Length: 145
Image (tube, rainbow, N blue to C red; front, side, top):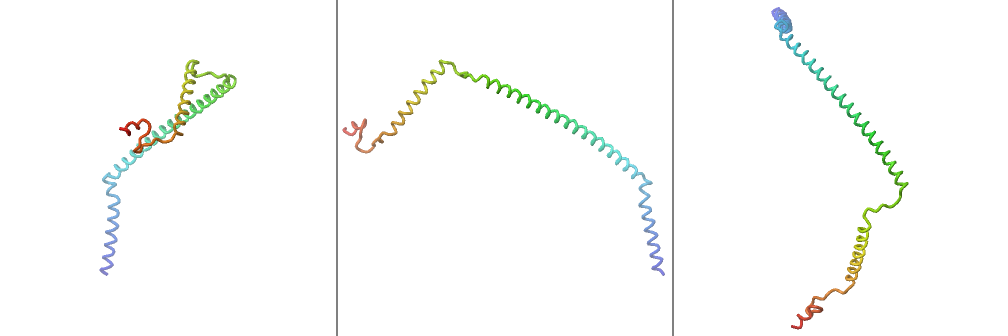
């Protein structure tokens, strides 16, 4: 029978402890303070979320405007290019970049350069020079001394 009394006392103590743990913080007001702080943080988070949403909406609108302006600029440049191509087809006259004097000088220099190239090519067909002991050409005098 003592064990039955012990179990009843244990269950009564446990029930009293659970009730005390449950209601003592509510009486002290800590739970109320924490719930108020939580509500403030939730409000701050919601206002931050609204600020971010409005910022992202403004950025999206700005990007759409930039895209429209880029498309419009591309269309205008394409129209200008087609107009330019049409005028170039009409006027196919050759307009020299350089003046007559400069073109004549450039033609002369090209003739001189081509002559130099042919001279260089003709040198490559000559026999190689001899650098042995028996000197030839200009060095033959050194051989005789």
